Length: 116
Image 1 (cartoon, rainbow, N blue to C red):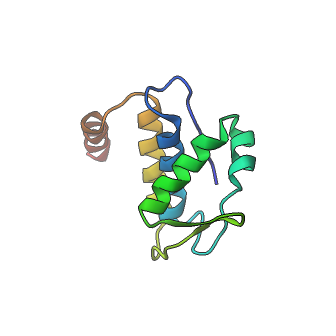
Image 2 (image 1 turned 60 degrees about the vertical axis):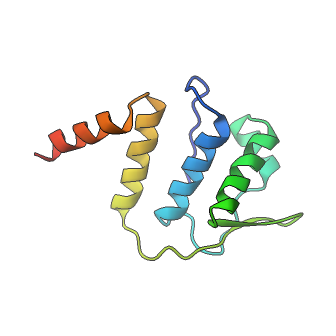
């Protein structure tokens, strides 16, 4: 699972983290029942506050993607079917666009142009 945060990007870090984790779950890089890293471990690895990780985890819990088990960590709560490498590439592309300040309409325009 690849997680990239850009401290220079406007907006909360927990949203970037939730987006990256969501992409990993949706495209199957992290499967049903798998444990996510402990909040403290992930915070340490990303050099962010543990509350940033916990907030991202709560967002994903509220979306129904993960379950939080106090003292035992977080696990993926949904089977999302068979997703292809294309789904992962799409999520990576959107994450990269966000990190570079490319908004959705501009990204869609770029995709349409490249598709022709």
